[in-house]
Image (cartoon, rainbow, N blue to C red; front, side, top):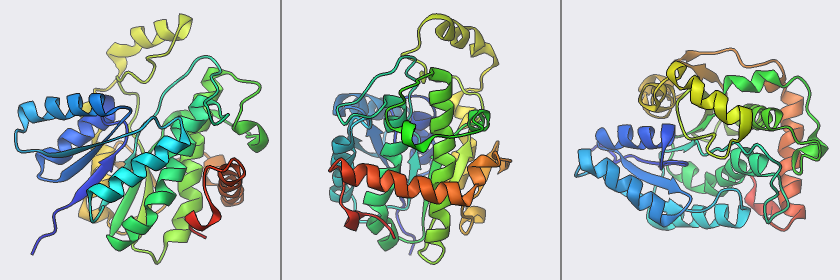
Length: 291
């Protein structure tokens, strides 16, 4: 008897996330659409059902820049489904000015990295019960632009520069997988990284000035979300990747992440730092983390 597969895609209201949700739904899979608001999620679901009337879609919502809302989204997932076969950590944004969240964290760091880190830990018990299960985190080749990293300055980015902030958050995505993969070896859960390439999305919707102009001019050189979705889609569904763990893929093939992103000691230190940051700010408890 076949098992009805269920997947969570964060940032599913536009861009790569929306294209991935549509692709999963078109193949008969059940999809939880991670959205900033319930309303935006419902609109995204309606767009998919225009072409796929019988799509199995549910909306789970939360502003992932705020860790209390990350927790709320995780609870919605646990209430909505008895099993979870895959999670695609896709939600991201680019803030070109330093914006601090209610938790006291710089927004790019909170949205692009810390939310996915916490969400993964909160959903790990469900993923383990559903095994085999897969986690795919969406990064970017921009991660290789970062040659050094100051852990103590990550959360608040006192010397904020938007290009470095985004690229750093993408480096943290890869380091997250580098640290977590060895801890999952015998769990039946895997984590891998997808680099979708240079994609035409609304990621830079908050961009201003020269950077906003660059994004508008670059549009003709960017891949469509429908094309870019191939890598995360295959990583989270294809049988040939069932046992792949801790790897980096670009355009459907093994890629070459930066040396810094594969630094196991740095990755472990980042993991410990992230756990302490959440606990110290009373946003999590020690028992919620995979040892």
